Length: 318
Image (cartoon, rainbow, N blue to C red; front, side, top):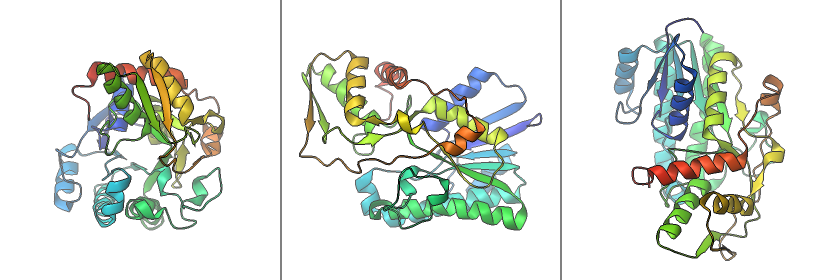
């Protein structure tokens, strides 16, 4: 990218935004100006507020992370809100990026938007192959439409708008709220609280058998920055660890016990649902571009995430 590029990161105060901030600071780039904004800076559901934000910072590039997100039960009871708010947000960011001549937009999708009935591993060509899971259809269709809009803006106006599809992300600055957190931050908070209260039993919901691919937020941040600078397809790209890096929830629990040095018992509550057994995503497309990319070893990433939470749990999103 040429000198004096201004990169606006929406949703910049969240898990991925903070990770990108960390990686950019480590790089010490001088030819790019990075601006990280959160919901307090502008209501992206409002066209005029979004326009004012773009007029203030004059971005040449945008990483669009902002979204209305929530846990399973919040999704199930507010599908209309998830649909409308995300549609408004995405439409405003992409339309104003077009209007103001932004050179490139990279938006963030999610593996949870894929069809409910599908074959594994899932890949980039399968996003629109059937209805999403009924529990989060509002969020899913809004996110899928980013891909549709990217293609339409490219076809009609020649815009370089694209999107990435991360697998399960975790790391420092995660959301640890028990009502809306994902599995790793939820278990980190739970085990931290058990140890703080001198508890001796760490109970994990389900059998521990389901398999998941987890990507460390700092690895994802590096890949996001690579997509911004180097990836020029309109079609989305899955950003995921390799298929063989899939771990079970039982493996995850054991890594957390090790990272916390917890000496008590681990119990799996088999009366609770496991959810989907696996959601394997293929990163073949990513590996064609970056065959030698090194992901942080899972145990190291878990240790760093635990250490961050122990040092910052008072101010973390609990």
